Image 1 (cartoon, rainbow, N blue to C red):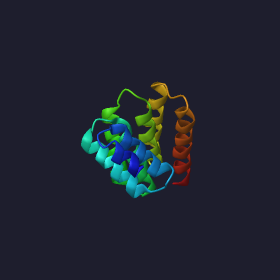
Image 2: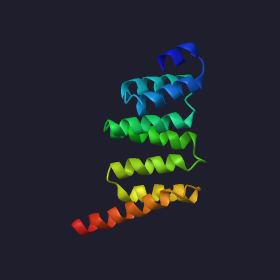
Image 3: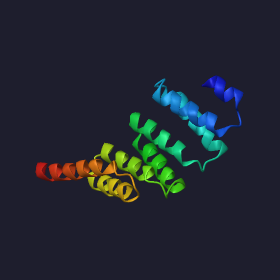
Length: 133
């Protein structure tokens, strides 16, 4: 991926692909974040890069950074369902099940039918946590 970015230093997609590849294929989150930050510096309004960075920060258990990344994803891609689904994943990881359910349901309303099962799971977790207390 370094060769791709070096060959196309002004191409936004090169940094996005490099970040995705580093995260998913190489499992190199340090490089993934570096490429993502370079892309954001070039154009901070590309919403999907915040999705990538959000999940990297979740993997690292850097919860505040993950939340900020997902909030930015929503800000730049507010008319898409995936940012809400991703924010719901953040809330699930943070055991904030009520908020997760709200965001999953928003994703469903926006057309992501696959989020319905995750909304159901979040609601089950709410019920389970009430029973525990």
